[in-house]
Figure 1 (cartoon, one colour):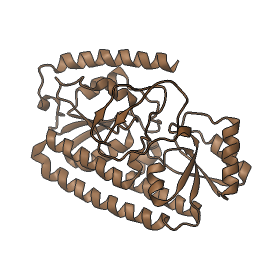
Figure 2 (cartoon, helix red, strand yellow; figure 1 turned 135 degrees about the vertical axis):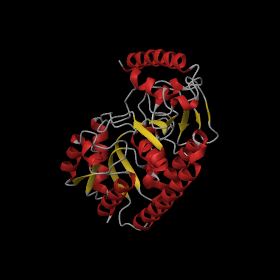
Figure 3 (tube, helix red, strand yellow; figure 1 turned 180 degrees about the horizontal axis):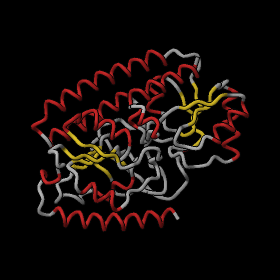
Figure 4 (tube, helix red, strand yellow; figure 1 turned 60 degrees about the vertical axis):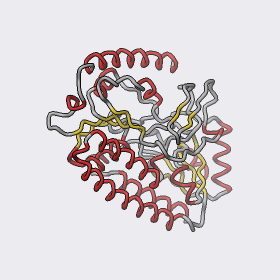
Length: 332
């Protein structure tokens, strides 16, 4: 069913791309700008949206494709979404295997002058462990740091690399810089604004990185159990090991042997908290917590915010600081 769904999405994408190409064939970059004259930007999911807003400030209009409260791993764009991308100046996505559907857009909007920006370009990627993959056929080769990609990909498994790059503040800094450069290229007259916004946020990211390092480098415990294996970038560099109940995507279900393995690990390492995510059903985490006598707590991979969080004005920095708070509580 998943293969059929992907083929249908591919057909929809092809149709939308054709329409976007026809409508944009005689257009210039300025014709894609919003009525206000601001740079028109679309983003694939929440971290890209937040980074774009922070760098662009009042010089850009940013719209996120994945709605609030929706888990982005299995989200696919509609034909309307593709048409929106075709009308923009800049489309920002994370890359590293997070948005497999973006491959269908490569080269599609040349006539419409849409800049496709892979924010994670230049990030040192973490290879996925064997246990993080679904055992499915297909290949995924990614020579990411030089920007060259092989064209053999599997849309049925999660790829060679962990895509959750943004959870390391130093990686977030690289991603914001890539976004900044794309804005300057598309809108050079506002270069100074984009540079200043980047420098302000880069400083905050440096401070956040130091705070994580100072807080986590000397914790009593060094192991956490998480709902899915999204936190390697955030934890490995500080000496913390994660055991994911599920793989790199939160939609898989652990079998009985995996549940037994996690329960044994939690007991052996005296794990006091089993972490879950707000956008994913917590029933498995709750079951394990009950079995080992632990509590549950949210550790947020920042793949998306809830409507409540959006209304409360939460962002990358506030959520990452909350993540640090619960990690300190769990590891000491």
